[in-house]
Length: 311
Image 1 (cartoon, rainbow, N blue to C red):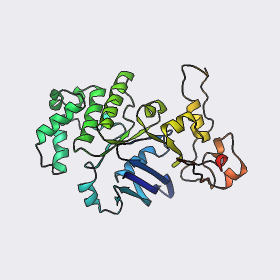
Image 2 (cartoon, helix red, strand yellow):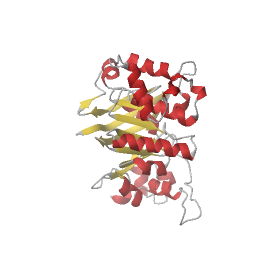
Image 3 (cartoon, rainbow, N blue to C red):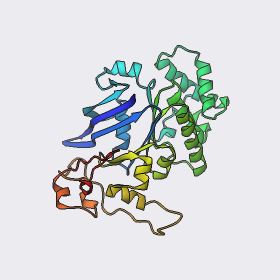
Image 4 (cartoon, helix red, strand yellow):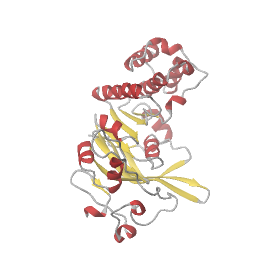
């Protein structure tokens, strides 16, 4: 059974008289015990997509499409029903900049207790908190400390533990290793791999192709609100098809091979004033007249790529 299915999802922000189409007709799926990587440059809509899945888009609105969890539409639920039965119990999220999301005036234990109380947790709360802290490799003494007393890596583990405390089947991790040194990054990735082996489904949002390659089973490449390429990790990494995906790989440092990094010229399109054709048209070295006029809709045997080159 498909754990999560997203169909033609559209999320918009209203800025004065302008409509920002941050997520535009995105369709994805995630099966039980699988991990999905969402990759793209800043402001492409990755974080908005994650927030839309948990129905928490500050300043934004889901205007179209559907999200189903285990065959049941979550967008058709009332907010009260979704908060009671889905958010944090079945789907939780590690937010971008999570290290700064901890409340500085409450101890870590108090913040865990607040989560359990808000969701009317009936079990042994102290045992649950101690067990989840232990599962992310932290000593119980952390619970009586305040956020400023912890290192960056410890705070990140605490935030991950908070996302796991109600044992959800799916966790969305938005840039979980950003601003961490390479050693702590490796520890966090090792923790996510461990959780995946234990049966947790994972959506990992990142701009770093290297981090995605460590965990993801499937990969979605996002550009200007669209998933421009989707496939298995092996397919996308060994044979990237979309010109934007190819450009991302060319911008990555390599131990061997091309000594010079190749940057992508131009800037992303204005999401408040989108052109009718391909959104990558102005930056693409393979652009054709058809690309300017018509948006591509191309599917392959295992995934899809939005590019007229594969018509």
